[in-house]
Image (tube, rainbow, N blue to C red; front, side, top):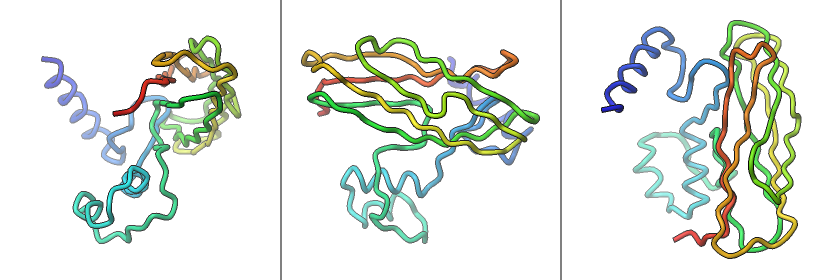
Length: 174
């Protein structure tokens, strides 16, 4: 019974803020447009004809920039040995004006994680900022391990908190 409530809340938000995309909420927004989904489908080896059917758009579809890294608030890293992975995210300040957010990381014991920059400073509403997350695996993890953690952005006033789940695994993808 939660789905009708969530749908109703989404409809109310959209009525109040018609300019917001579906990813929008109070605090920071991670936006992904149709071209972002096209890039991820190419990275997943979909054929151009299949992508055009899904996209239902006259937008030019090509493999340039194909990437499995979608601008979403979640992060997943699969690997079978030591190494690192870099994620780049762009967030939009949808608050009423200037804002400052600081990053904190929880979980992921045994891994090194860097957030650059670890502080986002917005001068106005709708301003965009980019940040990078680098997850490094120093010691080989045991087979079929799944580590959970999170990256949380907290504004200086403590009013907004934006939490992003992180999963690092050696479990094979089927």
